[in-house]
Image 1 (tube, helix red, strand yellow):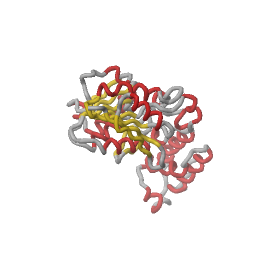
Image 2: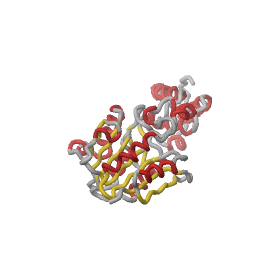
Image 3: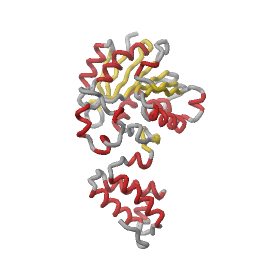
Image 4: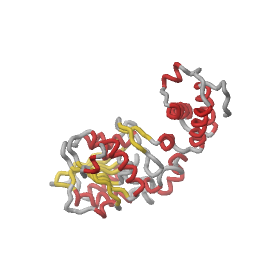
Length: 292
């Protein structure tokens, strides 16, 4: 794709689509359009109503750079630096998993039990999308987000300012801290709700994932060790010490892990355990309550 003064907006989008298709990028047409809109500050109507508009060389070069990155399977969200989740826009980069629609099931289920003024704990917080969504859609809740990656926590801090406002960090309404699950927490500090989307992909499965995931998303946030259940064992065994009586634990799971995680929580003494399915009918969330 070379620059030509006669190049139009629609022509540039089509050229980008063809290059992404040739590189076996899924959703090539959609990604080419979204990148064009992001680069040029336009919207869908521009392509529909003004596809014949001319494109400057500077606009072409910006788009060229984005297409070159997407051709190497860098995720669209890492190029634009943003991802929408629960009706909110989060900053993302290569240090955090890209928030996915599947994870909205976890947030929606937690919200069914969420009350104003609750104290929340988010394990493996990453971008902070789970904790910050819950806090945004409630009143006077406070939260702690824990992650092993300091780089991920920096992204979460940016999102906390973006979603809750800078004073949320200044007033300790939300605390984001580095730690290996519960290791750095004080057992005297109790929570009404614990949520977690831990690494749950089996180590030997990671190499089979699409290149956008296996080559670009952080392996630390993907690898659930040999059977994918490593972190669920630790969370189920330890979370109860940090829950108020009657508090609840919610975890996102892989599609084939529902029964295994349910049993882990049952063995740890949780009650009224539920396995919740996503919109595709696959197991997605397991939740249960601590005995009073």
